[in-house]
Image (tube, rainbow, N blue to C red; front, side, top):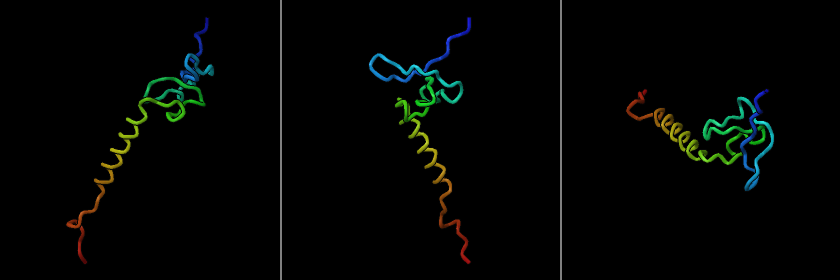
Length: 79
């Protein structure tokens, strides 16, 4: 007997879920670890509970990168 297809774990109502089959690779959310169909695979689409943590981490990473690239006046060579 073939294994059952994994279904989308997006909750459409109080006790109902999406009945579409989950996508194999791109349907896995790296933040909440659930499996979703093509309609609900993006964190914004399935209201990912860890979306704010992901945004904060990306913000901090970009801030650190930009601060590392900051030009300091003592490094400037006067001509």
